[in-house]
Image 1 (cartoon, one colour):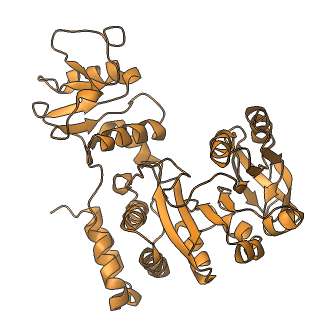
Image 2: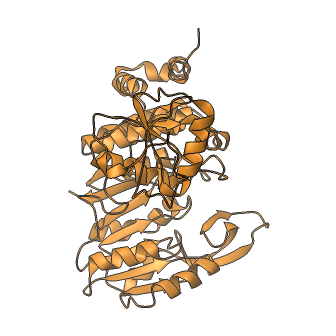
Length: 392
């Protein structure tokens, strides 16, 4: 008999006597019984299943299923026409806008790319959800590289305890579903359990930028999000952004040049003012982390939120995506948070300095700030999990 990954997880959890308390029993049962949002399958029945893909890989999808099946499924894509696919008599291609919620839908992504685009799959999932198609399956052979590149999180009993504590403090069912889904996805190394938010990242229905906000943004990357947020805060607001990677800082300066409300600093947010060594793995994408050895590719100056805003209007919204340095940055912002109670949007998906999915919610819960907590997951992969916080 084949043992499922969920059964293996249940067996591992049963070995931890610390989790036998009734306090954790409900959380563990809910975790184990959570179904996959997007089943990963390697076979379909073409007679009753339709295939959805992005238009630029339609020919690849058609060729793939022609090799595997004598009867082809119907293909759906965006604005199809004869110029984007090789028209053949036995191939039926329709516009994705004509899909109905009664149809059994299967997502196909590229087999030839080094890895399928997370944003492309996320776009398809969201688009289908807006048509009330909520649980499409995904072609396993087209996402195998995803599994090859991910190792499940080390499992510790204290992690499960803290997951349960965070889960129980979340303010709505949508947040609990999102948090539970990413927890199970990380524990199993299976992204099919992630629960994708239908609202845009950083624009939570309750916690979001508003007209007149003073926004502190840690980790600008390419400046695209900064521009979107600036539109929300309007002419009466201001955005102070911090980016330590020189290439990303220069790119952001160009992209935000037409936004007078944006003030950029080529430095990192941290718990205090100092100089840190950075390991930069991708200069143009902002993939960097703080290291203590002498093998860094660059050094950067830092400041804390408390220090930087000591002579400026206090931020009303703090957004952090600082590659695993979120807790030190929050430590350097505690005076501001306690005194002015800004909204918080904090990335909790990094693992280079510990399991942020657990550690950051625990840090903020232990601080007893009097906040409401929400979670949104914004990728079909394991990244882009955001903790949204607002003062009660």
